[in-house]
Length: 209
Image (cartoon, rainbow, N blue to C red; front, side):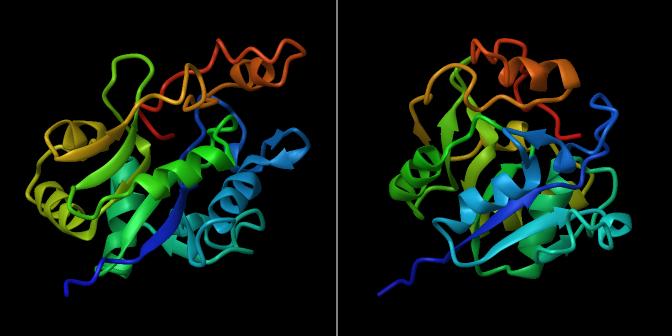
């Protein structure tokens, strides 16, 4: 009998937050730091949840209360965190989310885990924009992470979206417009918390800051 790799959780919190001009992990959404909310979403479903950080963030008070994985690759964007998690536990699949997706909810995490098929390279939600896999709310299997790491180390593209475009992905229908969007600026975050509840100003997760 072939064993199925366990799934661990990873919250990406190593970005520069350039457009936000403040640390997105510490920004409040509905009165709570966005990082805390993201970690708790995964902890509700998974026993082992880690936070991805740059080495210079390891002593940061917002982050160091969690189990951390420090980036082992440079200039690789979100792939640095994803692939560093793989290097830490090569036998595990990783459910990866970004800390700056405030409209992501528990039901979406549960549905993604329920749909997971380890026979695919990954299990992901489809983007509401174009139907392609959303890379920062995805379960990556260990085999595909090993291949992705080899590509990046050989000088290939470190973009998770481009990698998934050529992978065998179990793709779930989009959960609806805006739910997978990122808050990259203060204005976007404010629109998400507005009285109307409209997140129309948020942007898709092409790049993790």
